[in-house]
Amino acid sequence: MKTLTLGYSPCPNDTFIFRAIAEKKISIPFSPDILLADVEMLNRRAAEGSLDISKISASAALSILDRYWLLRAGGAMGRGCGPLVVSARPAKMEDLRNATIATPGDMTTASLLLRLESTHRGRRVPMRFDRIMPAVASGEVDAGVIIHEGRWTYKAYGLHEALDLGRWWERQTSLPLPLGAIAMRRELGRDLAASVEETIRESLRFSMKDRDGAWPYIEKNAQEMTPEVIGLHIDAFVNEYSLDAGLEGEKAMRTLLEAARGLENRPFPKHDLFWS
Image (tube, rainbow, N blue to C red; front, top):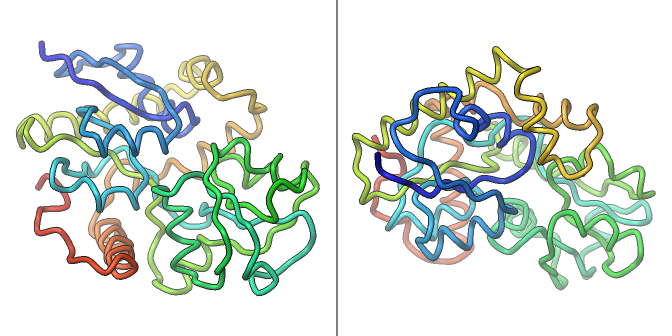
């Protein structure tokens, strides 16, 4: 059986989706060599071409389409679950126009959305996502773009929401927000891509039917989140688009990447976006 490197984050939505693969609860058409890492590290590993299958930020797809296809299962997309811009004092984006804002990495969808919204003209400081709220609270930076569980925990740091970037995107496009996707090396072929996509879908269905059984694996990797926040995280980021992006999801992804292409003033890649 072929060994394939598989990268995904320790966040509850990813571990919920991939738990049955990690624990070999289902039939798998490959031997998984698993890497759990922050999504910005996964973005960079995919950009280097060093992972066979990997969770990536949706925005990072633009730079890897020459070597990777996107799969329709296992990603993160939805409504009401986008990044937030937060600050230590009540503020609107106009107040933060020239501020120093921390982002969870230059290749993340959160950073792209901040650029697309276009109010901010100041310095952007990339840092690991779990450092952003403490950095804002301590005054190290003026504001931050928070992702993952930060949506539910920022008030505990005394922070204030300046803008919900997901809601902004939905108003602009009437589409769900693509946050993350699963990418797979093109050279592995369409037959294996189809098989891997269906395996991810089966793994997700397994966790949906056995949520209690999935909990120990999720909690072990959840970076000190409370059970309540873990549950909110899964409910927010695992949905019908996780099973299949569908036509609306594909349109949302293309719209996001077209917007990114416009910022960078380069042609949209000629390669197929999805494996089929």
